[in-house]
Amino acid sequence: MSKIKGIYAASMSILNDDLTLDIKKTIQHAEMVIDNGCHGAAIFGSTGQAQLIPVSEKINLLNHLTSSKHKEKYIIGTGLNSLGETINLMRVSKSLGFNRFLIMPPAYYKYGDKEVIEFYSKIVEVISDCEIVLYNFEKLCGYKFSIECVEELVKKYPKNIIGVKDSSYNLFENLKIDDFSILPGSESKLFKGLQLGCSGIITATCNATSSLARKVYDDFNDGHDQTVNQNLCEVRAEFEKYNLISGLHTYFSKKEIYYKNLLPPLSILNSKEASDLINNLEKLNFSLKNTEAA
Image (cartoon, rainbow, N blue to C red):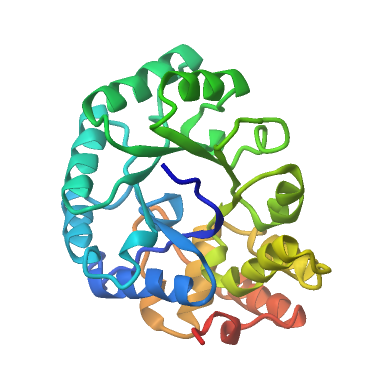
């Protein structure tokens, strides 16, 4: 087991006009964010419309992802409401050589720590040779990990539970576990998190901010002054005025029209919102040229 460190994008899924998954463009996008500075990418996280894309299309993409030049740098999002589907998607992923998974607890039903521990225990009992990043995002699944729950899972499965993506932000300041990756879900938490001993970030907006986020990360580790962190946080704040998926797809669609395709009920921003977003980003000296691979 090796600790996950660095800047990770929750990579976007690109759709055809008939709203099926565009395999080639989705993989190209993931490779682009890594080329732009990310250490890796999470495939089929929330930003990748994971709960809306059919499992069959996910499996099709995974079969092609094995040929990606960055194959070793992907974390696969396999968390679904169905325990069986979660396990089956992990089995397929493992058969293709992927062994790191981002898993959110099921949504819809109310439950607590005891039930969450049971959920992950069932997974590890079946897929014993795997590495799991817990996904803490109460806004989406209705459950917020407690420090005690994470500690119990790591104690129970130290070789399997290797980290947490903290998008509820109740863990990254106070959770302390040796050789465990703590990855806040926002660039605004990157610098503070690093100061507190966090490993990096996994965020939606790193699809666009990868080079800036990487500089903040590298400057911290090299002991250099922070010269772009404020700009990074301001860019994140502009995207946060909207649904992040809608804002990101609107932003990228200004360069490539196919980014406008989203699965309902998601949609791109209306014309006024889109204009406001692009104009405000430009005022921050941030534009599409910031996301072009070197």
